[in-house]
Amino acid sequence: MLLALSTGHEIGLGVVALIFIAFALASSFLFPRWNPNFPGKRLGLFLGVVALLTIAQLAAVEKFAGESKAAESEPSTSTTTTQTTTSGAPAGDAAAGKTVFTSSGCGACHTLKAANATGTVGPNLDETLKDKDAGFIHTSIVDPNAFIAPGYPKGVMPENFDTQLSPKQLDDLVAFVYKSTHA
Image (tube, rainbow, N blue to C red; front, side, top):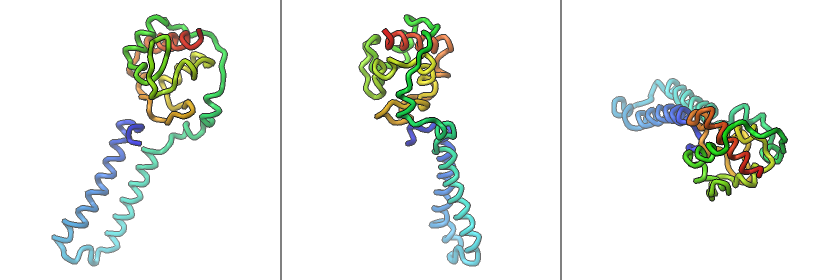
């Protein structure tokens, strides 16, 4: 699951967990050394802090590891992945897009005959994109969890291609994948 989280979410979960763990260790080993009767008369305060930390950890998991509201309102993946679209070809340069496909490492995970790519971590693009439009392909690159091909889990494809690629590179990549899967 951690692989599917962004760095910020991992840090958020980690900080809250670290505070919880530090308090548990201090309550078990450190505080009793200072006061053998710990928690003694402060049992209510101790239980309140434990309850507060438990709620904070649960809230952190809900906030940082839960599905986004957009993902919850999307149609199911089986419906989403079987939709067909019919818009025109994209505006990018397909020849330049092949270079982007290769240099971005797309072929390590995806099969695409036009790029001599045989990756199996992600879906076979020749099959899954043959009836999809350029908009679908673009969305699948910049928001890879928006549509999940059957048999593949969410969170495997990196979610940062929209920041790693320039708009032109992205248009070129979409043009290449579109042209390759609609030949």
